[in-house]
Length: 207
Figure 1 (cartoon, rainbow, N blue to C red):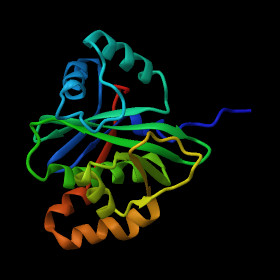
Figure 2: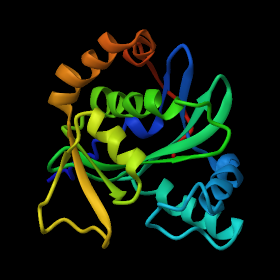
Figure 3: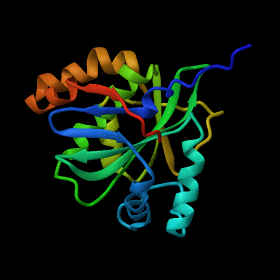
């Protein structure tokens, strides 16, 4: 019997481009940047996973996730400047869902997250074949909670799903997001039009 294919099989090696943003697969050369973002106290204060202790441990971690098709990491560039990364992980080929996270550096422009967070979801739903995205958010991170609610996320209280104490688990539905949330955002502000016009290209670099 053929093993099920991860829904991220193509997504993890794809590049997504709009007029402003570029989401490109992370590579070994990006690990100093990712290490810096994960190690910064302000950037990582709401992250559940501990920061790597050294750049060597960061590189070892990245080598492991590169071999696992249930994981995907993309660097986010705004006008050519790397401002953070987005992750998809624990992708489940049986249920077409995955967990989603974002880590942002300090170079981001004001309001950037409000635009590219929906863009990340659009790329995952449209090109990753996912039906649902899950994201765990620290209950004290009011900005992130408000942001995912605006994107149509609903609290998901399934007791069998692991999450750490103090975290809220949200689920975003592809159907709800694509049919209602994203068009509604575009109607509210012209800046959202950028998130509706995404070009996808497969590249050789895999993350």
